[in-house]
Every structure is written in C-alpha cells, then in structure tokens.
Length: 123
Image (cartoon, rainbow, N blue to C red; front, top):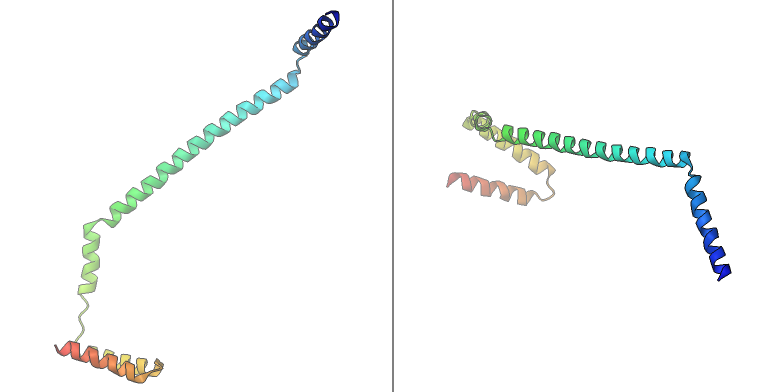
C-alpha cells in the first residue's frame, strides 16, 4: 500500500506542478487563435449574407426589366414594321435558290424543297 500511496502522491504533485507552471505564451497563442477564428467565421457569414442579398437584388431587378410589357411591345413593333414588296421577296428567293443550289450536294432535293415552298405559298 505504501507504494500505491507513493505513486498517487507523485501523480498529484505532477498535476499541481502543471497547474502552477502554466505556460502563459501557449495560453495567449491559443486565445488569439480562437478569437481570430471567431472573427473570421463572423466575417464569412457577413460576406455570405451580403453576397446573397446582392445576387437576389440583381435577379429581382433583371426579372422586373424582362417582364416589362412596354419593352415587349417595342420589340414587336420592330419586327412588324418590316414590310417587303413582292419584287423584293422574288429577288430574295432567287438569291436563296442560287446559293442553295451552289452549296448543296444534292441539287434535286434542293429543287424539291423550293417546289414544296412554291406549292405552299399558292395554297
């Protein structure tokens, strides 16, 4: 039992000595690291929330601009104002035929295509 008590006393002495000789530099280093980590986490959260707000704001503004009916009407006016005379359409078709015939590998399928278009426009 004497040996057992002696070992217990030695362990208690080690614990007491460790408590008396705390390394203040280690403690301060850990304290500063912990504080810096908390500040860094708080900054990350703040930056994340700020970024989310900016993205949502841009998204909402974009959607409201795209849903603007006046803008859609303006685009529709541009497309409806184009009017082509019959002479212009005939010239366009002639140029398109020449281009497709020159560029196609199968001239007969190209001519058949234009024949179908001609029949559709007559109906």
